[in-house]
Amino acid sequence: MATLSIPLSQNGFSRRFFSAKRPQIIYPFPHSLPRITCSATRNGAEPRENLPPCKHISTVACGLLAVWTLANTSPVIAASQRLPPLSTEPNRCERAFVGNTIGQANGVYDKPIDLRFCDYTNEKNQLKGKSLAAALMSEAKFDGADLSEVVMSKAYAVGASFKGVDFSNAVLDRVNFEKANLQGALFKNTVLSGSTFDNAQLQDAVFEDTIIGYIDLQKLCVNPTISPEGRAELGCR
Image 1 (cartoon, rainbow, N blue to C red):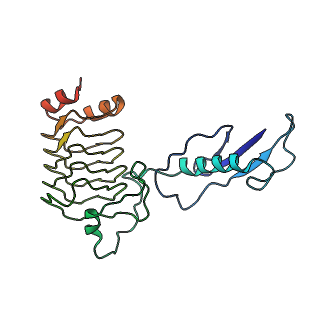
Image 2: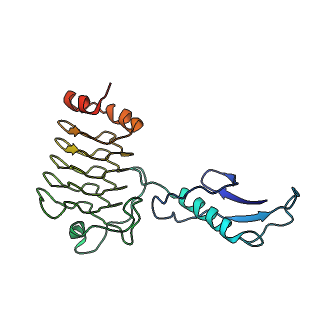
Image 3: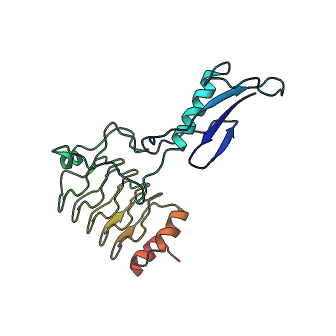
């Protein structure tokens, strides 16, 4: 039987996997990757040697397990984690008008979209329907902008301002809206699965036909700034 032993330095213990699970790539790999070693046994005997990765056992099986391991040890960006340095690209704010078309669902990209501190106040034409997967939006201003039909999978919008923004028919799954200002935002037929709104301002936000999971709904309903009308639309108890 082939096994894969993976020491995870961050937690100080090893895990032994016997089956592969579909990888979920969530963000670029950390600087230090876990060490992966493969070993093989025959007829229940103890391993005779530690083998180089994927040698003497199925290369495909070991490779799949290695991918699973790397993908699942990659961190999701949280407010407490260090962000990459602010991009020095002269026209980085204009990249929002082009968007990103690579790996929309998982927030995978060829080059990060860095929109931090950019100002898109009252932008009504150039952001609608764009893909901003994994975009860095902290401290950016989108007040009064039209973000209908945008795809913001795994965007980092901590401290950003979205006052009065139209998010109709948008896909906002796994977005970090911590401390964001979403007063008067319109979430009509909007996907909010996996998104977090810790300490966000949601006064007068409209949640009409919002698509959200039960657990995510319970977390959202804890926010005290949601109006009674908004709580009724969400079905908060």
